Length: 176
Length: 307
Image 1 (spheres, chains in turn green, purple):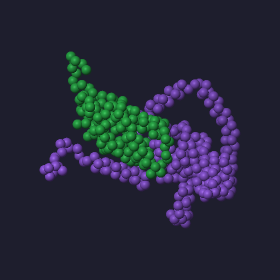
Image 2 (image 1 turned 90 degrees about the vertical axis):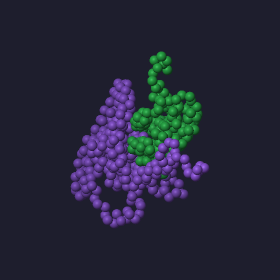
Image 3 (image 1 turned 60 degrees about the vertical axis):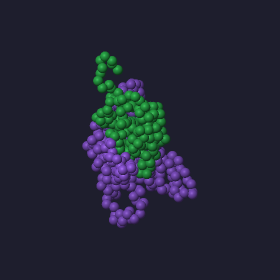
Image 4 (image 1 turned 135 degrees about the vertical axis):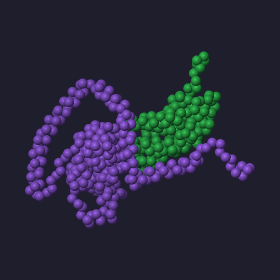
């Protein structure tokens, strides 16, 4: 089962993921996406990285349905085209969950190399949809978002898996 | 296929295959997109969802708010004093003009009454503050802090101290979305202040606008000021909009390529004035309506688009 270990090559067995925690992290990521930085380049797409993370680690719980719902919410909040982020996130989630079994064999640094193309592809989809609807072209610096989001992959590993790293019961004689 | 002639039963129930789910959700997204972009059928859904998200957005806005408060706390007293002096100077220089304006307005009213012309509508408006620019990188829009609760309507013109900066395109209960003039979906009918030549000014990306459909031998020069012509029935006539910055007269094209820079602080933040909607225009003559359905040119002249 995906998600019982931090990576497939690890000996460590994790606690099962708490669905409420997954929903909470997606919600917090959504709130962070709402912070109005305007057109400042390089602000990471918190939702995309969280969604990709859970699609890789918990493909049975978080998939395209969740991606679609969060995407529509982002579309409404950003005032863009309705369905634009939904489409991009659905494709991102599909890509992430189908690469899940491959990605989890690699150590964190090499996982990051898998994440970058997925983030870039997400932005490409967003741009294609906007271009087809006749919207403005963003500046080239807009692509920085992919890189900053990708940099969050390793921190996300420790933050989002933190509850699963907790020991089942505390052993007073041999504290971990 | 297995030896037995049928698939073994699945160990884990996983619902529909990923590709089937992908197709379903992609189709759903595309349906949403088409009904939003082409049919404009999603505004009610958007309004409902935005109202639901509103408290979250307020919470998300607080870090920016705190940042601004802290920044303004550290603004030096001398800056404020020099600002104050500057504003007083400007106030004085404007005062003489304002005194004359009220006199001229009265005179204009009387003359118009003599000539039996329609009264010009007085300019009224609501002061609003630009909260932030929308996160969508594919359009140039800002959010202001007044909404339908304060009587803002879709289609109203937004100006700052110098000139027009945009138009309200979407109204939410407590906020409104303003499309800036530089948004490439936004266009505004203008005339050259010097000689009254009419044209359509359209947004062309950050800090730039382009004057469309003017012949390459049109009488226009770099440095000309463009003001609203008021033909659209939305913008009041005579509001300054932009100056012509560069003209590219290539005789191989039918139209000149005329680049303009906006006069108002289109890409800046601060206080703006949302002008009230113009009074009812006289009905268009019926022949014109028929012609409008046949040719596309009048629809290009309109600044409004469907909200």
